[in-house]
Length: 620
Ligand code: G6P
Image (cartoon, rainbow, N blue to C red; front, side, top):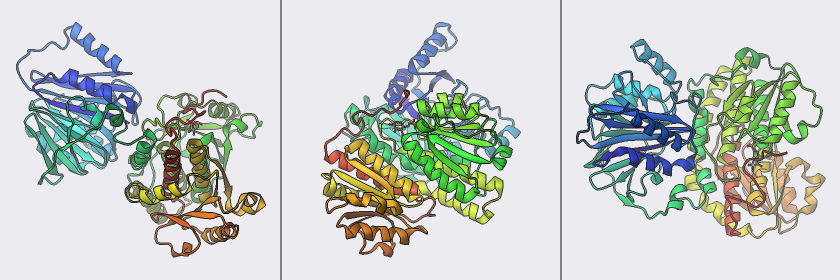
């Protein structure tokens, strides 16, 4: 995900910004840039690639004298950014900072501006000249549009017009020694120094300079000057804020205070889903998937069949996608393990849409399956998290998830993003094909947009119970997972997570199929995790639970909050918030990730790098 850093104070801003960006590298990025105040202008340097490319561009500019300016004492003022491309390709123009037409206001942005298209059109009509394809640039023009010499006021007015999930920092050539930041959902934090201040998307950016931080809450605007920082509500009311001293070492800082990357990434899932949905669901009565290459509305309307090819966790995301696409749009869907599909002489061709789901976009088997389908005349869509990856280069169109870089080998936030992207596609198909009533479509989109909030709530309140269950069962040598309908892929993914990081043998089965085999494995020592969330098949699942308990096994049920039907049936209940039952997998998988996580931790295993596994498998 993108990184932000800003500095105001007596020292030269540029080296501090570059050092800050160095510390944000772990987040992953594909371009970077900084803007610093020089004389009475702002000088921006941006470059595609890593920070050494940016340093090269800076020294090239200095060498040619292109950036020579009158040096006069003034506070160091600057902002920097590492960009992980989402809207628009990896180009210098799309890299941040962005600036307004007069080049007097510069901004760096993380996240997504949902209503940028309408704002951009309005600003263009008023004469603004845009230079990038990004949604972020609109903020620079919008702030400039409201600017009359008071950056704080301009940011506040602009903020009120923006919708989405973002954080940004703005500076003006006319107000040295001032940065104004705004936070709507995405993180932004202040680092307090002696007569100098930092603002960043994550603490590592300034940890070498100060350990005194102030947290910016959601929906707040901060005014950062060398002598101090003021906090305001979006409406302009001044707010008090404590200064907190943190005692992180560099490694903890990279993990944002979490003990592992995996736990950090589990906690980033609300953001990852929110960003993936972003502006695509802005209009509520339908979905806009943006540029899907040659895959246009006509093609989606007439598609004969969808085939998803994928490996590992991505395969499970595809399985959930199948239920949603078939239910909402009535397009038949097959989901195939890529390593099998490629050698099967599959029946596929014109009229079929083949979706390669791959977090990395580099998995050899998935790429080969996509190629096979394309050679036979099918249209191929890549659903991936990595801009410019091989899958994107070989497909007719790309649908990106926006989970940011995932470091833990076991996929978590990329999985929920893939599922969210499948829901978006399913709803778009339903809209184009008229297979959902308009009010049902709108209601489902509204519920989908509410999921990030529900994920955040679960992560805030549900963990203690899961840790306790993990403690009770971490010595088991086998776990069975059961589910039906959309609960089945959740069971498969939960079981995969547990075996990947705890090395406990697991099996995941369609609950109705249990009596045809796995039931033979059950005894009093077997924990059986059952996805028993509210759905039309819940009664059937409860019958399966009874079959399990009749063999003395221990049932850990994942259930919908407040559902009394489970009472007396399960030994342990993990509750998830109520939602549309087709969307419930996005919530139900989170406790299963945590269960696997805490069991692995109790067994003192290295969860970020489990034995024998690789994050990206580029070999067959
Ligand atoms: C590896 C990873 C898994 C991932 C799978 C597919 O096995 O360890 O987490 O699900 O590859 O990767 P992809 O990048 O294609 O989604």
